[in-house]
Image (cartoon, rainbow, N blue to C red; front, side, top):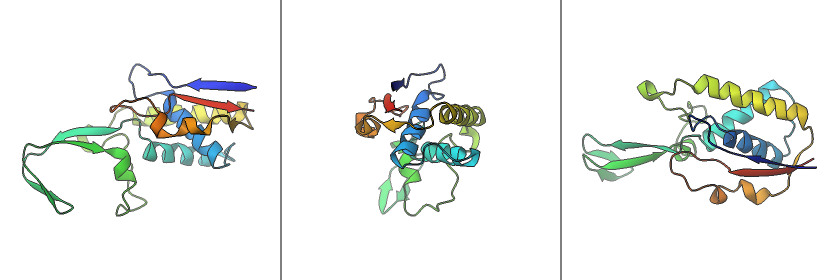
Length: 161
């Protein structure tokens, strides 16, 4: 049997099946499906949010000259801060908080709901589909995801079981 999961935008554009697809793909690709317990599902979802954030980045402007990695960024410069890049920075402590849902006054009020929704969806899939395999592993390659600088994730995940 083959099933195709399509990632479509929910009304908020952040709560979407792309994160579920990304988590399922990560677990299948690493031979970790089905997750053995609830904590493993939670960890897999967290890893997916860190590496494939539902929000690709933030647009910001500098208010003053700043120095970053030996480069001066002038006041008024427009920047696109890529969240997945921050989570892959080798100088960032491994237990640093995830920026997937923003920070400070820009923290997403729907973060807890989204985490719970994705956690429950992955848990339900694990119970219903105990032995899936990726039918098209290349489909999980970010280079094949929909071109979108606002929200990222796989647009299609084909699994067999």
